[in-house]
Length: 120
Image 1: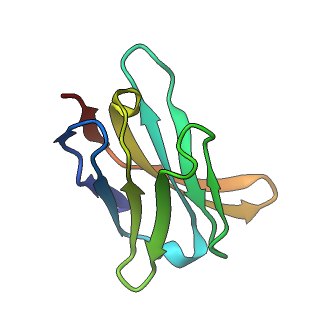
Image 2: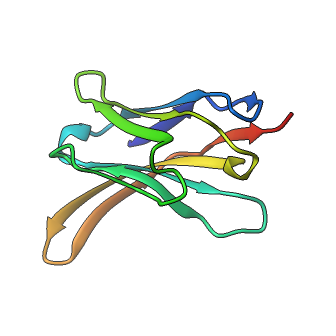
């Protein structure tokens, strides 16, 4: 059974920092592309950052220069370091794991989410 368990969400003041963690079990993340997505109330889920199995990273324009995604394959964990947080970063943050098996077939998994609230 595959599980992605996010942690680290909290209430933080504008300008503050948080580090989110996503601990995986039931899969070995070194072959997966891992990502963080977020969903604010009344909005669709959106990509925040991804990191491939080759450690190539991609970020949403809204978080470039402020957020950093990283992975520790030995710990089977992915992280999202969030700095200079803004109220518009408030959302539930979800961890994602994807593996392309070929011939159009994917293994995709999601965590349950962790709440990040940026407010004074």
